[in-house]
Image (tube, rainbow, N blue to C red):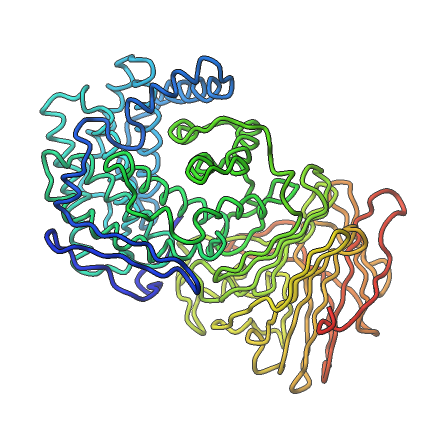
Length: 632
């Protein structure tokens, strides 16, 4: 998962490296936030260092606890069996090679990480040296690479993480010659480029998005691994990484949301946890970083944004139809913040999709409490506010709708303020297409008129938002929630979209409501039009669209039906169009757009559409009372 080049800098500068001066990293995490207090210098890190190996994330005593629990925990037994099976599969694969995909070595770095953790656990669990030998061969292979691609520093950071874990976990298996070769590779290809980046104030060092957690955590893990023989690297990297992490961690405030969407929430959060886990195991403390406002609540973010279909609410550069397949980091969040809702959610996914090595390193037993005690509705008020509504936690056919506000320049953002997705009857009716190919020319050119916005999936025309005169939303626009209410039979949110359509409308507002005992969804948009213009209202869907009459359309998907009705304005009708595109863009095969066109809009205009699942034949909500959004 990657972002763009220096054009994506989010301001600020990393702390200058100094091994003798105390770093302080008090940081206020949003209005009313509590500061993260503390300080650290390089020599204090060395003095705190746990002297033995393994010292990173899963120490021997942690492994022994797992082995004791294994005797009576059937889920843990399954995790071990799956990990050992995966370790065996690597013997059928060639050793890792230096193969870049576009400008990135990232796939190789990630595969190295998977192999080293998996083989390392297999060796430490069974004592069978064949796993250690294969892990050593992988380590020597990547340490012989000409570089770890520091021009795309995620690649370097993830490889530094992998090699650091391998060196630490296999330390007592390695002979001194192997240790020396691995240290040299880690220093030359990972730690020295990292120190250069801190000294040059590279943009990623204290940016406010996922690169921060990945790069700083990857480097500090590598430095911790070799600190007893090469302390100078931890003395330099450690204080910088610890000082810079809060610049990204503050984005979890105030309530745990992540502005880059759920896909990047997982990437950023698991690297946050890798880093904090490593600090705790190596130093006995994470220096207060786990107390950053919002981090204790962030486990609620993927829970609420997972619809009853199993698909996440998809925004930013998340994957196309991204399913909630595995979130083992929720074990760590559950343990750290003593919240079984988080860890039980991970158990539910584990039971359905299987385990990874991360389930083992952060394992927490299942309490079988689940999420049923949570409210049906929630709002997250981070830099990209999100509201989510549902009719049930346990019913796979439940009604679900999620909508976003935010800032169109957020990292990985699209021009999609007000975009919504909707589930019912076990299928997703309104959908987001997700990201396109990161290697497309100009994909990261986000400025006004930038090439990023010429790609269909990134612009407004692919999203379930209005277009005025066929134009994208303002690329600098922000949108906030102005009202949110949740009651037993209904709930709603109102979003101020005025900035998105400035130049066309004096005011634009969207309301999204679940109504009629949560059996239907109302989308209501209101415009104060400055000059006569054309408004196109649209929703992106996989469904077949049958315009049954001027004001109604029947959507059919996987044998289920949804009826859409135009409640306002009078005199307009539904139509449909294809969302398919030509290569090199993603083609979006079979995807369609449900359209309403208001060709000569002026003054106060309201577009209201009622979406009614056909729960059983002939049983759907046929109408709804309309009131101005100001009266909601």
